[in-house]
Length: 305
Image (cartoon, one colour):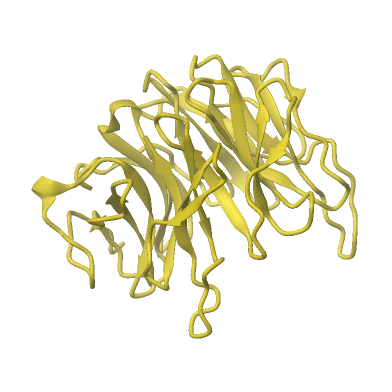
């Protein structure tokens, strides 16, 4: 396994550990490998804090702990092809593996509870994903959903509820058969599941994120065609569309003050690299969008704390 945790040099990326900012953490692809980078709300400087060389390995879904002390993420192991949830310090040091994939069950997409004592994440495999919860050290792991696919959990600010997306109420549509998904909330023990969105057949609503004050949930949806960013009140009312691009916009996450959302998109993809994914910041009330990264490679799956 070729993973090295340190603040490392990469083309165009600053590497001074003492100056590592603690605003936005995201997946950055340099030289064919998915690593973790950190930046601030201006997108400058960018610091890469892990060093993966590729060859089947890759990091995904980095998430800040409360207080920005640690970063949880999932890692694909090159030799075993298994995926597990890990935690490291904010400078990329002191790696800890929290789950132990057996080759049939994988663990990915972690999310911290507001008090930092627990993690929610996906457990399963490509044939079916569920939501699991464990203590922050990986102990007391238990599955809290059953049936269908349940993915991308995110905690409410009070720590009492999880939002997630699921295809549990969908029916096959299209050829080949396709199951859409909707946004749901449930208690942290898996009880009292409530559906928040009703997405047209063959469409998806996915990857929800709770606002800091608990009043809104942002998510990605293809309900109107191309994947775009939407927001809804946490009780399922007042659905509104926030982006209107001709290219996909995905993975929204709230700013600390709740006024902005960070997301990734190929909206400025060039002819040279048409699928280039970059980070953008959306002003929720003014509907203005500014580009945060400009690498013509892959910068995505950001978390903003």
